[in-house]
Image 1 (cartoon, helix red, strand yellow):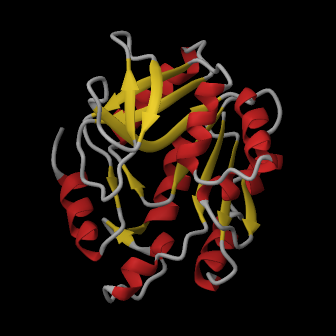
Image 2 (tube, helix red, strand yellow):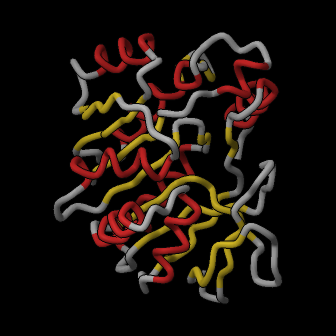
Image 3 (cartoon, one colour):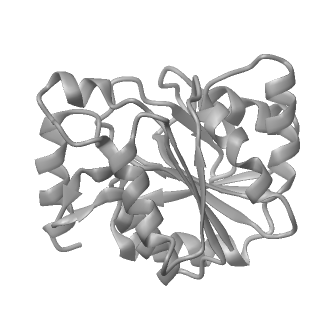
Length: 234
C-alpha cells in the first residue's frame, strides 16, 4: 500500500504562539512528528511514502533527505494554497493500482487504532475508508454524517442529527478518488473538505472507521496534549 503525508502548511498559529520548530519537526516523545509517521507507515506495509513540504522548510527537507537513505520516500517541495492542492501535487506518486492512505503531518493517533484501521481498509471493498472520531477538539471540525452501517452520506460544516463524528484527517482511498481530485482542480475547487464532498457527489462508496481519539497539533498547548495522549494506555 502507498502512503502520503501532507506537510506543506505554514504552521503560522504555532509560530505566533512561540513554537520555533517547523510543524513537521515538532517532537512528540522525542521524535519529530513527520519521522514518526514515516516509520509508523513503514511498519504497516508501506511500499512508498510520498511527502510534500513547502519551500520554506530547509530543516524538514534535510531530515527527509536523511530518511530517504533508509526508506522509500518520494519528496515534493512546493508551495500550495490548500491541502487539496498538496494532495494533487502528490498525485503522480499515488497513481496506479494500489490503495493509498493519506494524512496531514499534524494528525496524532495511537498506533494500535491505526493498525486496526489499516487492516480494515486492506480487506474493504469500498472506495474509501475515512477515519472519524467523536472526540471534538477542533476549531472548525468537519462533521461526518453516516447511516447505521457507518456508510458516509455527507460531510458538513455544522453538526446535524446524523453527524456524531468528525473527520480525523486520515484518508484511505483507492485510485478512483484521483479522478475526482483532478475534477476538483479543473473546476477551481479547493480545500480537502470540498474534495471529500465531491467524492460523495461522484458516487464513491465511503465508509467511516471510528477512532477513540485523534489530535491535531494546531496550537502550542496541543503539543503537551499529544504527549499525554500517546503516553496514556488505551
